[in-house]
Length: 362
Image (cartoon, rainbow, N blue to C red; front, side, top):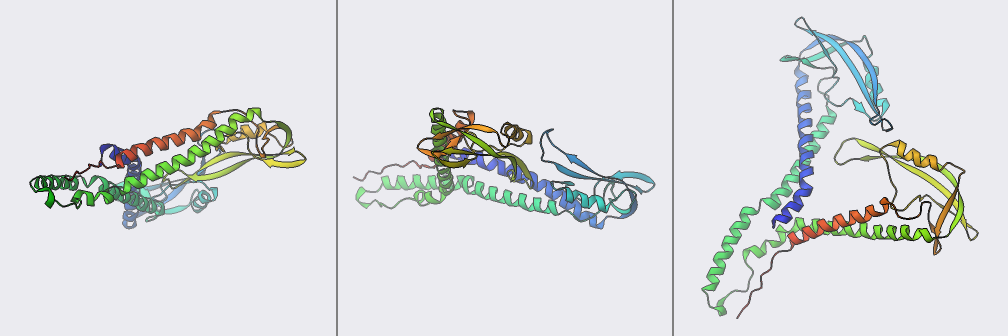
């Protein structure tokens, strides 16, 4: 396989490898400590802090994380220690009720058994052996590492075999040159027999890139043409019937937690030729979700319920409408995304296409 093809595959494999390594290390460290803590000695302790902290992230980001803050005092060999670990897992939650459960179990002043590492007494835990999240992270990280390693072995591990095939091919060609033409075999050499298997991964990757490019370019072209022509569309007066913020959770990459996105959900009604239509499109370029609630709120505040708006509609299709006419940066994003997929697809295609040498028989 050409170096260009290897670079194309590395572009996709490296992030998976890095995430797999980090998740495996984090999960293994916590899982190992959790299992070891089952045999740790214990000593009496007392809860001195039991509260909930809220992490709002950015000042206007409403995706809150609820953190159970528990700390306790204990003594080992006449030395006083303070620790804050309940179990070997994250104490941060997206749901308030999950943090509440931990806080209710450990109110201030409660006497508890503290399990500590005899060689490192400052390392302690209240619930030994508990690390469900660490176990999931470890399994997921190992799976990602195995999948990435297998793909890399399939592609890069064939370098030596390819070299051996090339050497055999050279010997075969040398032998054929010494053989009369009428006795030469027309059967393909050993390298040709393995071409199909060695090209499967880049072939699938190439097809995927071109399919994604086609989808983005078709959609982007349609949005671009509509946005550009919307400036010449006729308009009518419409009325905002609902204006809210829709919240959706998405997993980012291989993360075990979800991130909140906020969408301005504005609906308006408008009449065309005696018929009432309804739409939610504010501008072309697709629906935009924001990680900060304030950005979605700004758009919603501009379109309160009952407000009169100017609705521009396509005279050929009155159901295709928009509030903000003309081109904006959002109209170019699908096209840019499609071009990026197309470029990567072309690079992969160049690396996939094997160099074919014509054989002349005479």
